[in-house]
Image (cartoon, rainbow, N blue to C red):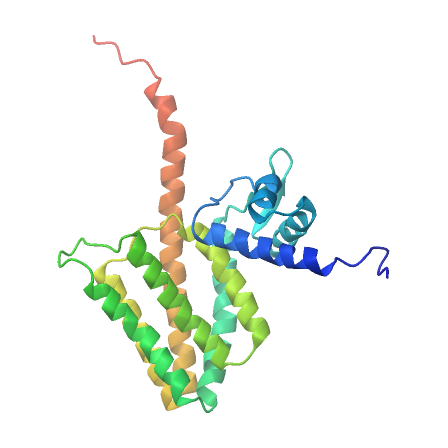
Length: 259
């Protein structure tokens, strides 16, 4: 049966489209698809053992969501975030997560959810304790993966406790976009992990005590501070990228002639 002049997608193709969508998300999150890199329909179709039609549909959905973009010469590529994109994404996160944490604090939460939330907060301490004792030590790639999973788990559980599926979906998409830029980041050090643990644990306490105003203030400060850190990193990354592009030009200049 036709709808809007087109045939509905068969169930099998819809399943492949969803698998393709998740596969591309995972490749972006793991850094296998870098910002600005082209996305190959053929390679994805071969990896999933499917035709290119559901792959193309998944790519179209991700273009609409801002994860990918169409370019005149290279086709579909992973989006390269700009400075204003980071500001916009953090403003969206702050608006939604501040509301969600306040709602979570105002309601009665199960002991199991509160225990899991505290566990996510305190896992950061266990990750920090795995670092060598030197001040310059930072998380390696594996440890950073543990931290990202822990941080995501804490924020996702807060959103689930607020019981708003649309907010959860939007924030998850926003965090994935931020993850595209975060590929440029190095590992956290002990001081930063200590600070993040303190912020998360104070939010947990505010939720457990039913203090919505305090929980909202803490979440707002937490996200704003994270935004400032990402913008500093972006400015440093942009400066380094600019230097890499212009430095070869200077290297080609002739040496000054001795008098």
